[in-house]
Image (tube, rainbow, N blue to C red; front, side, top):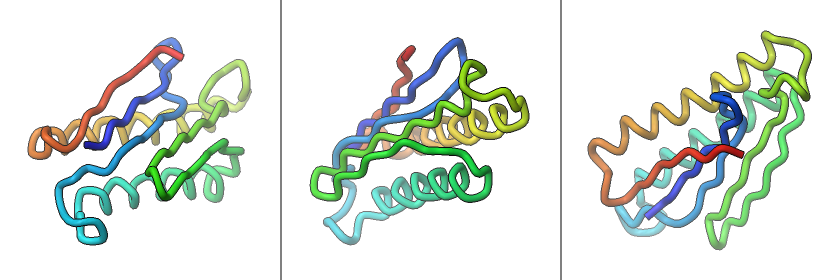
Length: 116
C-alpha cells in the first residue's frame, strides 16, 4: 500500500510525504504506482520550472519514500499571493485526484492530511 500524507497549515497545502508500493500490480507493471509517480513528478516540475519556486524534495527509489515541500505556498515565506495560490492549489489538486483514485483503489492507497 502507498500512504500519502499531505502537509497543511491553516488550511493551506504545502507539501506531502509518500511511502510504499501500492501492490496493485507486479513491480514495473503497476499502473497505479506509475500514475502516482507521474503526478508527483508533474508537481515537482511545475513548481520548480513553471512557477520558479524552490522545492525541497527527497526521493529514495529503493524504498519509494518521497517527501516534497514548498514553503512558497505559505504567506510567511512568499509575498506573491498568485504564487502562493498556484503552489498550494497544485498540492490541493493532487490531494483531490488521489481521493478520486481511492474510490477504486482503496486497498492499495491511503491518503491523509496533517497540520504541519
